[in-house]
Structure formats: structure tokens, C-alpha cells
Image (cartoon, rainbow, N blue to C red):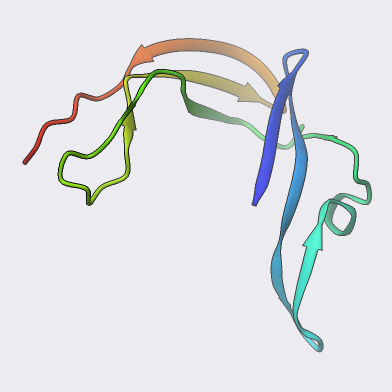
Length: 97
């Protein structure tokens, strides 16, 4: 699991942790230091992707089976770790099926 932050138009990994299966030791917990060699934020210059970040109100599933959706999203376009665009858009409308 990773936690991300946008600062000064750059994308950073600010926390990372999880469990991996090591070849000889069984399962092992890893974090920022094991993966990136530091506990400080790491500029994610390897990331090129558009992220849909929920910014509106949460809209629960009326039937209680699906994940909630949101009334609005901000699409954040990242190229080589740099934010190159942001666009707010309405979320999907949810109705009972």
C-alpha cells in the first residue's frame, strides 16, 4: 500500500508498506527504507498516468453491494512524475437496478 502526495506540481510517494513473500524467510514486511532506501518522500518520476481523484460528495450504493461513487472527480494527468494537467468532471449518476 502506498500513500501519494502532489507538491509543487510533482508526484511523491510519502509512505509505503506491505508484506512480501521472501525466498528463504517466508513472509516479510517491507516499507519505504527497503524499497527506496529512505524514509523521506520520493519523487515518483517513473509514473506516467491519469489519476481520477474523488473530490465531490460520496454517493453510496442504494443496494449496499457496490463500492460508493462520487459526485465529482479531478482527473490529474502525470507524466514522468510531473503534473501536466488537471480537469474536474462530474461523477457517474447512480440509480438502483
